[in-house]
Image 1 (cartoon, protein in one colour):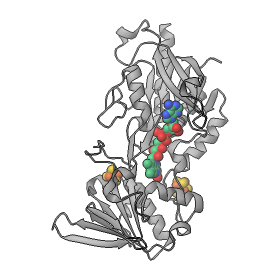
Image 2 (image 1 turned 120 degrees about the horizontal axis):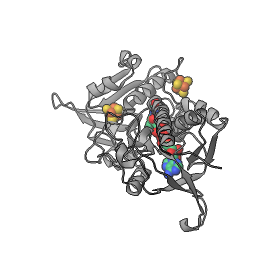
Image 3 (image 1 turned 90 degrees about the vertical axis):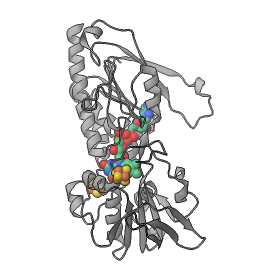
Image 4 (image 1 turned 60 degrees about the horizontal axis):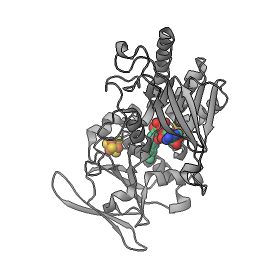
Amino acid sequence: MEYQVLVAGGGTAGMAASLELARMGYQVLLIEKKEELGGQALHLACVATDQCQKCGACLPLQLKNEVINQPGLTVRTGHEVREITVQGEQQGDHEAGPGRGRRQYTVQVQSAGSNSDKEESEFSLTAYQVEAVIIATGFKVFPAELRGEFGYGRYAGVVSSLDLEQVWLKHSTLSAVYGQLQRVAFIQCVGSRDRRAGNPYCSKVCCSYALRMAQRMKWEFPEIEINLFYMNFQEQQRLLPPEMVLQATPPGIKRIRSIPARVYQYPGQKVVLDWELPASGKQQSNEYDLVVLSVGITAGDFNHRVSQQLGLNLDAGGFLETISPEDRSGREWMPGVFSAGTCRGPADLPTTLKQGKQVANQVNNYLKFNLRKV
Ligand SMILES: Cc1cc2nc3c(=O)[nH]c(=O)nc-3n(C[C@H](O)[C@H](O)[C@H](O)COP(=O)(O)OP(=O)(O)OC[C@H]3O[C@@H](n4cnc5c(N)ncnc54)[C@H](O)[C@@H]3O)c2cc1C
Ligand code: SF4
Ligand code: SF4
């Protein structure tokens, strides 16, 4: 089978781009290294209360069904893109300028087989020749244990937001694991807006998911008291969808502008948070049943590799840079190479979905341009 476009990564961005291109009539090969399509969103739970909270976690499930049934779209799960090489400079490159011209790509794909005893070199590689490549390899969740001062992994009462998602996915309610919750704290910006951790950027998703989680908790435990520790109110307001701004301080959810300096827990007791109010310098302390670390988005491993293989630019956070920050098209500094989704920087599910569709249109334009050059 001859494919015109190869898409690396079967998360929201990769699925949206593949689907759109296959609908336009292209033969598309979508490679996903996990056994299942869906990306990180597979780990997100529905946080509906008596109404939908528009978290977007069900978007990828809908996409997945459409992808599986789409003619012209071949999916290989359990396979990983290892290497992308360009097949020489073709006529048209120079006159067309950066990000234009025509090239062919060889993409080496390996069976993921991570549970096997085989050495990496023993896995067979399959090479595909394609006209265009879309990189949609996503992100990594910040490992909460790297912020040692918060005691993640040491104290039973300190969990990450992703842990909460897992509990909701498995049990639909937090009481199944944590019992009756009376007081909970969220600590924002864990692993984001943090120069020491090498992540100076805002992760864009954690203010809104923390508020949705808090509202879901409030719905499960109406008497609960929730404190949300944050640093940048402006950032929070700017990033929240309008309906969340209106509900930003519902009763029982209090925001505190400070990041706790000390978190500790003695066996069998509650978690204690010590913090200082920035305006007055006053020391505060409180006990909680649970402390939730709102972990952010960090650059995925494939970014570095593909940047070395194709000479693509990475920004300070390790995300793929497109031709210009204003250029939302997903064109990379290599004709025929495009990117979409969180491999380009933090984004929520609706934004990644939109980027996937936008990049499909760019690839379509590029391939039409190519055909004129042949
Ligand atoms: C804790 C947390 C909570 C969140 N909650 C929300 C929320 O409530 N609402 C919301 O809108 N967003 C939320 N997000 C953000 C959301 O997860 C992302 O917007 C979305 O997953 C990004 O999709 P993506 O396709 O860019 O990347 P991913 O979902 O990371 O998908 C990338 C895919 O590429 C695959 N891949 C990687 N390398 C290769 C390779 N070399 N070859 C083949 N495949 C490869 C990966 O296995 C993965 O399946 C949350 C994020 C976090 C961390
Ligand atoms: S997963 Fe999110 S968007 Fe979907 S129904 Fe639940 S709350 Fe609504
Ligand atoms: S979205 Fe909110 S919590 Fe996340 S990094 Fe930005 S300001 Fe911090």
